[in-house]
Length: 296
Image 1 (tube, one colour):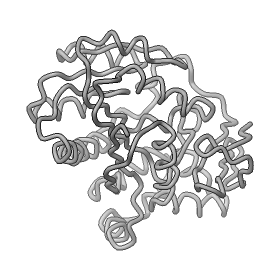
Image 2 (cartoon, helix red, strand yellow; image 1 turned 135 degrees about the horizontal axis):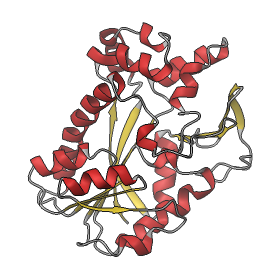
Image 3 (cartoon, helix red, strand yellow; image 1 turned 45 degrees about the vertical axis):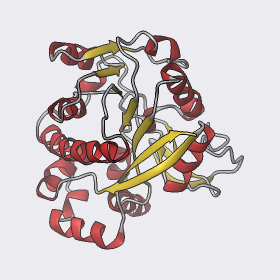
Image 4 (spheres, helix red, strand yellow; image 1 turned 30 degrees about the vertical axis):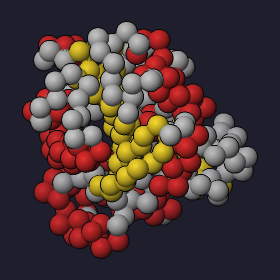
């Protein structure tokens, strides 16, 4: 059971969402959301095999490839000669492929999935399989080059609450002193899809919010961030926030397909893609935020 906020340490958390398989708490100090999962996770298969391999994967790929171009542009604004990048939790390698196409020479990816690492190695990326751990510093020191740039894209929300700060600290420790820039992308609790799923949960439609938290998968989502909670987390790690960029985290033309695959019901899909995009543009309710930070 969660007894304090994993970001700011507040000893009091307010109950935000309750379903038969999930409890979500909100920190009244930094507004961070932290989940307690009641459903057993699928721990016997590689996590990449837990998700739909059809329409959802195609939609996700188009989003991640578009976001990669945005992130590379943000990196080069800070480091015009950007190179020597480590993608922690590299997954299917979409971001590394985009970096290679953009001219990066030294690229590495690490992941807990043997399928992911095998795929990266087949494409001639430096890649390493990591076991779920409380200290990643030592294995990261064995990379074939010393990274200047670290990316954690859609990764941090999977860290168990009690290990959130220690795991990030161990990653940073393993890359110092050469590390210059850190890029983190996380789901935002102020996003349009999150707001919609929370409202549906209040009237008994729990499927969408359970899918946003990836209930029943291993590892699920434990955290949804706010800009305030991420800023606090970065500061606790000795990092200084230098830029943020909101992202809708979906493509208008494939939102319906992706939402059906996620929730296996048309609830979120009832939001037409173009209409949802217009709402995001007007309100700023981005479902993901990209953070850039440097060592203080």
